[in-house]
Image (cartoon, rainbow over all chains, first blue to last red; front, side, top):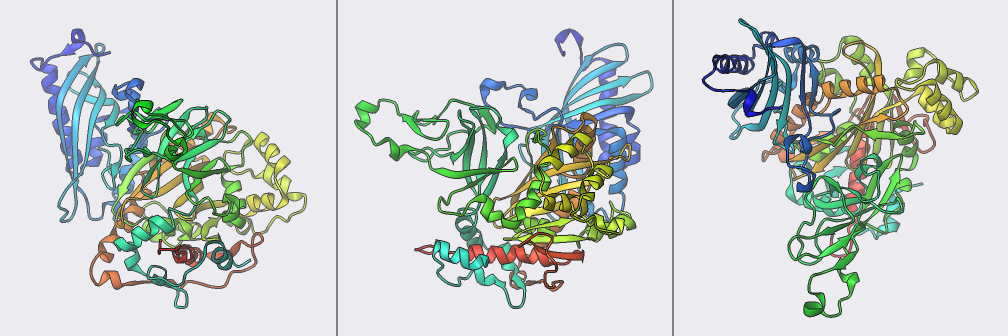
Length: 179
Length: 454
């Protein structure tokens, strides 16, 4: 659980390192460097994105309570299944990305929490935009991302990513590539 | 039985109209303006979504009394609620007072529904209960005037359908010979199927009919559209099979008999064959239970030509695939229902439910879910290519000349030996037969004008 006692502040060196990592990682995805991006994930990494529901206030307003069943979602992946998705995408016949989407990930509001000696939890806001051809308006996904990161002196890797989107309905193309 | 005659007698046919004329029965062509014309969309809302059986939910979404989900029929919001006696009711999510939408939650459990505007209250079956200050303001009021409009609700194979037209033929009759196809897809397990969580929802910039027409029977597209997914061997298998159609609902069945080189006859060898080569996900207990209640026809179709993909007219498609799990290669069965909700003439919101069989092993079901999530849905490696095609069509048919363009259905031939009585059947490479029959049925539905041209 995230509390002020285990939070890592902006002034901490680790906060700066994680910020650098997120800037680097999102740059890889925006730049279509999918192989390099997979190297940002630990071998046993999981990547999940549940369905956003609209539920009554008495059911609970927290993010987790207005998400779908744990077993289902838009993504329910491991590093291996993500690699498979991206290898299919790399082909010229992956029509969903022909022509390619121009994506941009804006990652902000980083909150960082110490879990143990090697793990931290992060919560960030992600604004994801996707434009194609000469469309007037981008497709947009707005979400809160909950990551578990494993950090040593030289490396940061994502071991768990859970994406809680605000979107009750997803725009057509937005999830073609992991956001 | 001539379906067209039955429907004409049933609802007072008025004659050819502009919308129905967009489908040319002689030339087997469809004017593509029907994919972008707002007048066609408005007419569909009344003549199709207002009078056909519309899929609203799966029974497992509302298991207990008081459970409800909020859904749409066409573009009208409805509440679908489980009653105390176990039945399911569908009523307008619209207050009888001034028309406010009553409930905005996706799902919940409630004994009653209260409109927040003036506090009018309704029971869980849409019956009016009370308004505040009734005696001071309204005196005696005829309560029946305030009951919420109810759509007729019928359930088959775990699927819940609603129809605003209380004079329409039954759900079973409207499916006709297609019933067996649905039973073999959704009703194999004595314990029933269960949805895996709430539906995925995504919005595509394309007319709903592109989705429904494709799922009615376009196997032809698999080779090219899904080239990134399929190797040459799989492509060949994907485009050949047994295509069927009844009353505008279409399906493609896998030609297992062809793959094995022989058809298993209707004698006792059907049971043995089902035990020897059970469909993916079917345990031997499930096979025993299925055999105990199935007709010989049902056994014959499941063993030789299992249904794999189709569309229930008008806009509820489904898939029952046997696909290899990515990690282990084990073949699992993944079942999916997809509703193409018509937002406008150029936009559709697709809702997709994943389903598992309760009697299948948890391990199988987990793998099936994994397959589903990777291949289908808005992030799906298969589905995103289909979405791209539909959106391509919309861009091209929106133009002034595009509206006058015509889709020509030429890969057509006469139906062959029927797989089941009254089920039109075509074998071999997937032609355009069942997709064409989607439009034949669409035209029939659009012909049925009521007084006042509704």
